[in-house]
Length: 487
Image 1 (cartoon, rainbow, N blue to C red):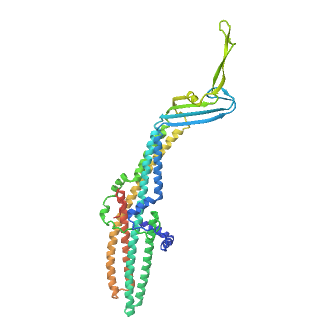
Image 2: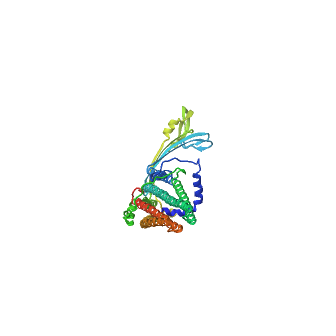
């Protein structure tokens, strides 16, 4: 509840007062701006908040993961090449002969593979990524809602302190009028000076209350500017809107009805539900490791070798050269020698054409035993799913508690408001009567000031109940999907 933060503010009052004093110094950073409406404050906070900016980046990261998961379904394609020099004896890959001199070679290849079946892992990965994008967006909406409600609370806190300051000023003004009147009576000798001193003491107390109210208002402005990440400025002022009426129809809808409506539109619930679905996909992904993997592969390669040579200027040796014997008679067979006088390396473009190699094939990989990793992954995925289900249940419980608490607070605030209003009306009458008696000398200053204090206290209680009711009913309206408004 917005006013529960006042105790925390009191603990920080020393440091806050110092900063507030700096705001009053001339020449301090002034950020000129017209009066800020609640909508302007909320929009500014949403634009400037670091947590929101980080969550936007998280959404973009999830979208990048989704795009990657979609592209993973497509076949891959890789290309490569090298340029090599060899010295010493080595087997040339293209001539299959020993080369003992420096040999230059080039290799080029293209390779592609397409997974035909992998237990639907790639499809499930894509679906899980889609769910994570949606969940991240709901998380962003939830964060923005929290910031919006916080801004509303601080905004109402300023309005509360504005009215509280007016009450303090009005009471101080009335007391000062009494002081001025009593001074004349004392000077005329028709009133004892003791009553004047009592009233002057009361005026000093109320002047201090005005100062304290001004400080609280200044701190509430500071808190709002810090919340929305606005440059601290003494010129920052909010609009004073016409607030919603304090009436019973504002809480006619029962909390269970509000809860049922909120279940269908609250982003934290939708995010938790989506995360349960994502955990289900995680189980399917883990089970996919059990399935065989069928892959279609294809490649193309070629190359060039400096050891691949061709002859020119052929020669024929006509002398009889034994080349073997016949099988039946074992007679000697004579032949001739054939060779080239010149050798040159086969041209690069010809080798690139002649040395081409193309492959197409299917690869089947059947998992048999992998150290129980697959079973462990499935068990952990099931645990993650249960955890996500618990998170969803917790979100529902938290939402129900928030709505029930806001409803109870609103009902209590309305009752307090009605009681405080009656009390203010009664105290106003009592004060008027006391003022008349005091003016004619039928009441002493002590009793008069006590009645005046009771009036001030009743007015403060009325304001507190008023703003508690507005804030809590604003929360209830917000959870029913209505636009954020205090009018």
